[in-house]
Amino acid sequence: MGYGVVKPTLGGITSRVLLLGVIYFVATEALELVEHLGNINDFSGKTLIFLVIPVALLDACFILWIFSSLARTLEKLQIKRNMAKLELYRNFTNALAISVLLSIAWIGFELYSKVTDSRIELWRMAWIIPAFWNLLSYGLLAVICILLAPSSNPTRYSYLAETWDEFI
Image (cartoon, one colour):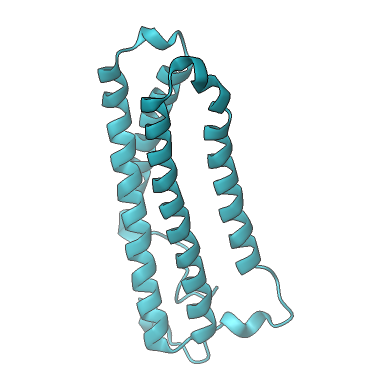
């Protein structure tokens, strides 16, 4: 994609990224263990909320971080007038935005269905909830594969005149 946009190092934020990754891993694994081990009545609603809130906050932080970084990248590409790469990143940003909106809508549907349905009827829809997340992930992966597919013109994303001073 070109050194001006994709860099081989995270610079000074490597330790923060690793720390956030470890915290997110621990929080999601704790939530998954509580949700999938034992009986449903083993843990109170307060315990689940205590485990869901950190994961939801970290998800929101990651989404904001991704979109703010993409906005800065789009700005840089627009300033440098690299239209091919700018169009690629705009399409990627749009795909991510659509997936976030679909996620929010689906979370609303999940909450509504869990609150209004009786436990007797909930099992009929139990397979749909994880299936949606798998389909959404697959769809986003497919979009990324289409956007980054090899082409007959591999130089379309390269910079014409760059100096190393810009990147130091």
